[in-house]
Image (tube, rainbow, N blue to C red; front, side, top):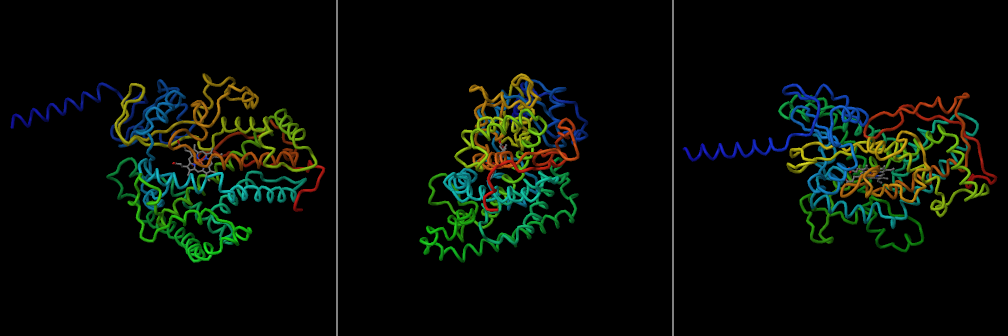
Length: 512
Ligand code: HEM
């Protein structure tokens, strides 16, 4: 008995001692049980930046919301620690009950926890879905950008909602890349499903903070979840079945494909790994040949692509246009470069993009000031020590890419839109090794769609600015443009950009 009591005492002292040795990172004092839940509305990029500068230290801020520990990271040094030095502990994703249910128990890549399953999913996606070799995705970007230019032509001389235009553009791009020519008619239905998913992903759930109060989440909410997933099942199952039926024919008819009669879409690429008897547990790190995807995996990956690739790119295009219209001198420089490099007698080609240095600087500057995903959400797999502070297992880590991109110790005139800062060869790049500029994240969980996203972003902005001049409506001055953002999965403009286009080229728009 005495032995048992001493063992308990020793382990208590040991555990308690560990805690005391490393305190939690600094943060505002919370209330008993609920912690800092009264600050819930400040869990945005701007709110966390303010709290960090008031209560944080060394780039770290600690909050508790019920049972949940939250650590906000707001300096490049701490971002490096989390995304590079200790990345294997910090590479999980947080997911609430709704997300787990809607992603078929994390059967996708974006919400899968770090481990063999995620590694295999990422390998397949990087090789087959996001690869530059998948020429069809790149072709869908070009064709949809052309068709957007044709749409703008119809609005010449009239106010045009640029925000809605570019959201429709990126939705069309991802939809085409995912489903090819299949079921284009169903696109409106799919958009409604996506919107409902987006609302459910962000819905407040008391069980995230107090797991024992999970029962409070009403049956109504559960019904809504079930309905949303059933709609997606109905929609994508049908597309998958169509692909299954035609797969045999397609395989035996490669010649037709070679003649360009049909193109493989993302579902085709993923179907190549489909196994009727596959289960999520089949994954291991040993060989490619063992990888088999279930229908749920395929559905969940398609959702990743739709969520990861639509709002992000649209928000960046709209912000780039708004920042340039807000700074007419910068807009003039970008358009002058387009006139000099491409000429007014033709539209921009893919091969021009590399030569459009100033345009690319303007796009980098847009991503610095308005990273489309302002907070990178990670979760810790185990207890760890960060900057000398204790971070418990399963803490939610919010890396504030927005605050890092505006940190005055890394950036001169940090809040000013100044594309020329990127002309300097030594300026930070967004490929992931400069932690003061991480719009695509860095390391294991960084964005796998970066190349495709950048291509859509650069090509769209280049076309919109080369083909058209843009004026603000009703004599509005650039300084009057609302430059506020809103907060959700991404940080789009608070009000849609509306502008009046006029045609700028001396040649007719191709395809008109
Ligand atoms: C301007 C465009 C884009 C930006 C700024 C962007 C940014 C990001 C960021 C910041 C992350 C999270 C990194 C982290 O947690 O550390 C991410 C992840 C991801 N992105 Fe993108 N993205 C863009 C375009 C795209 C596109 C076009 C696609 C797909 C077609 C895509 C698919 C994904 C996926 C699937 C993930 C999750 C990766 C994982 O968890 O392993 N993104 N992106």
